[in-house]
Every structure is written in structure tokens, then in C-alpha cells.
Image (cartoon, rainbow, N blue to C red; front, top):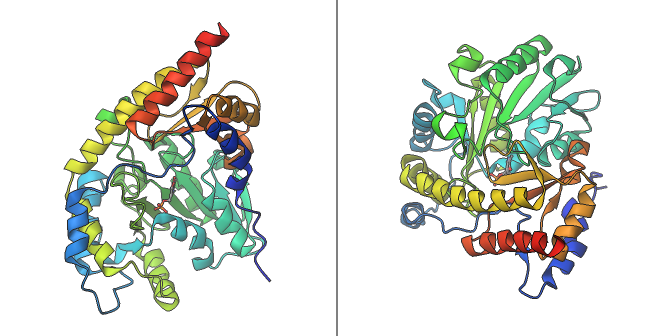
Length: 371
Ligand SMILES: Cc1ncc(COP(=O)(O)O)c(C=O)c1O
């Protein structure tokens, strides 16, 4: 009766959580990427002001919301001149990722492409409609029957940023295949090093798509940069010939962003100060944890943007997960993100300053004990 998805993989981490919890000073949980800092006051207040909401909200998003999304894309993502039929809200990004293959009418015999190391929802969406999932970062090798391609930049779990050249290759290949190209970009305002000065490229940027947004979609979420995971606040933009049928299907299915949340999103998009502050907070956490992870002996790959450190000790990820659990640190095995991650683990920066410092101390002390 039920669609045959495997059990939620995070249950496999439970035994290691138990080991980490037994550490005398308690667990430092660096597994989930769930924000811990407060939702900014300016956003909370916008929500509070909008709590009188007796009528149904607009599935397409209020005009004010869509205008705020358009203005934000132009100001922050280098995407000018979107029109109101090119943007829509979603109830967090994950539901839209999981249901996009369904909305596009995909099924058996169709291929959905995802990155070689990938956030878990892309495969879920393909599985729900019986499509085949192919994990590949090489546009030229994407199969002929590909109908949907997922890009994720900056990536979860690896923090990799796709540059303009790569994005252009992806666009060209998607055009050859006649496939929808969807880019999941929710960490795009959280770049480090080179990406503090340079804007992380957006799929819809004219430098990438030459102003032709046919068959292109960008998904964005405010969960991370605005500490809004609890509000379920996200949106998508791109080809109106994709957006409008999706809005229609969502209208039929009752998938609406609540009206107070729409107001909160408008406030969040207009306020740059809280994003700048949150960036600073994560940057400090990253500096501390990254140094400790490297000193411990991990090789860190990518991790140039976003909220994760993607690292390997050159051994199977589960051995590393256990090694970390024994010093009271919980990390995620790379295996959760497809075969490409099986030697890696993911450290998340979404823990309090104290917990990050404690985690870094434990890593340093473990080196001292072993030397
Ligand atoms: C790459 C990526 N996409 C989408 C999401 C989903 O975000 P949300 O459903 O909170 O908007 C996440 C959350 O961790 C993510 O890492």
C-alpha cells in the first residue's frame, strides 16, 4: 500500500548518539543542520502582526510576497527582471524538492540526475514516482532519457560551489536533453574565503543562462540564513511555463504557505542586517571547528560555503563516526549522501558557540592523548 521508501536513514545513527551521550561532559551534536540561533526579532514581529488570518492564503503567494522575492533576486542573486508569474512560495524547500518529479509528471523510464554526493531529498522525489536516479556531476554523461537534473550549489553535505563555467555546461546539456534543470541554492549567502567577496553564481543569472530561463528553476530557502526552519519558509523562481502549472497543482492539493509566514518572509527578504550578522556568527564557528578538524588529521574537501565541514580520515565513514562518538561528538556518515560520500563525514556548524568550542577542544585533546 505504501510507497516503498527505505526507513529514514538517520535511525542508523542512533547507536552512535548513545555512545556520544555517555561522554562525561555530554554530547556535542554536530549532526543535523537545524539552526539554533533565535529567529530575528524583525521577522518574529512581522509574523505576530499578521496572526489575524481568517481566510485562505494565496497558493501563488500574495503580490507583495512575490514582489519581495523578485526584488531580492535582483539585489542579492544578480537576477534582474523576474516577473510575478516566475516566482512562487513553498512550505520549506524540502517538500518542493520531493514533489517536483510528481508535479512534472515523471515516472517509470524517466531519469532524474542528482550530484554524486547529494542531499537526501532528490532521491526521495525520484523514488516517489518510480523514476530512476542517476548520481553524476558530469553533464556530458547525463543519460538521454533524463527529464530532471538537480544541481545543489553551495552543496550539502560537501559545501561545494558550482562556478559559472560549470553551470553553463549544465545548462547546455540540459537544453540538449530537453530536461528541466533545477538548482537548489539555499546556502548561497553563506560563502567563505573567495565567496565572501564574490557572489555565488545563481542558475538564473544572465551570465549563466544568457537571459534564457526556459526549463530552469531555482529553489531557495530561508531556513538557514534567517533561522526560519520552524516557519517553513522557501520559494522558487524560474521559467513561468514550469512555475504556473506547479502553482496550479499546488492549488489543487492545498499546498499553501500560511499568510502570517508570507508576511514573515517579506520582512526577512527586506532585511539584510540579520543575514550579515548570522554570517559572522557562522564564520567564527567555522574558523574554530575547521582548524580543529584539520589539526586532528582530517582532510577537508570543498566546504567553501554553507554550514558544513566535509572531511575524511581516509577510512570508512562509520569507523570515523564511531571514533568521533567516543569523544562525545556526533557527526553524519557520508554514506547518507550516496556512495560518493562513503569515506567522508559531515560536521555541522549549526550548534551554539559553546558547543562548537567544546567540540574543537575535544578534537585537540584527543590528538594530545594519542601523541
Ligand atoms: C541542500 C538543501 N536543500 C534543501 C533543504 C531543505 O530546507 P527547508 O526544507 O528547511 O527549506 C536543505 C536543508 O537542510 C538543504 O540542505
